[in-house]
Image 1 (spheres, rainbow, N blue to C red):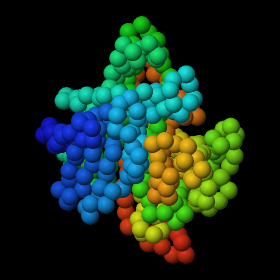
Image 2 (cartoon, rainbow, N blue to C red):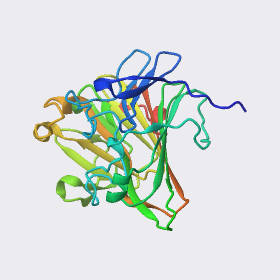
Image 3 (cartoon, rainbow, N blue to C red):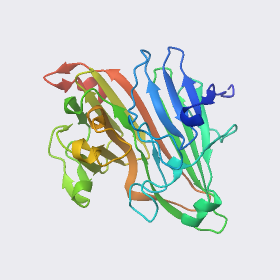
Length: 312
């Protein structure tokens, strides 16, 4: 079998930060900043942006970038002693030329391998040695895949435990025109009610106010239906049992300095995550969490997506 040779461009982004551009033969593209290993753009063959980037996003370390796909590691939100969402999203990552082999179903060579290891300062706040490898790939059908491999490299025998999320911001036409399918009847923790546990009652999730919920034991496939754009985002995930659904709505948006007051209308976060049951790794052990995003045309009948197309 021929060795995979990644094809990507390295260029300068906002404020001179290094970024990687992935291109696929039909004109689809993705952009990744080495700062945070942060995907900031994912475009289809028509050049339409599929991710949402805040109109007030700040590209100045150490402030994390608001929008796109931030990585939450080794801590999700404030569930621990670290800064909210951990430190992986505001560190400079390195391109890894010769990573360990990663089985791939895609024959596209539009991908890049990045790696993060702890600095001395990181070890002061989280005293564990690790290697966090991330492959970001753009497939032949335009799908965007992020595969994380986190390995415990401690030499002192210490295990470590972490929580994780791909904090994906999707671009939507109008939040009030969007529904999420695949999370019906599931239990969730409501972050707006001190993480009290409830059971989802609706036949789909729709939006008319602030939402911040952690859905538990979720399926490997979730769909976001955008009625106005006749587009459906399909989220496929492995190794990530939970899913966070977040939109700050109007009042909360005004309190977030790097989010525009009206941004909430055109964004929705649905995040593949491992939160309820944190991951524990002994030295030498590795965890893998995979996210695949695709955008497909959706056909509607009485407001419902043709289920054969997405959630079979």
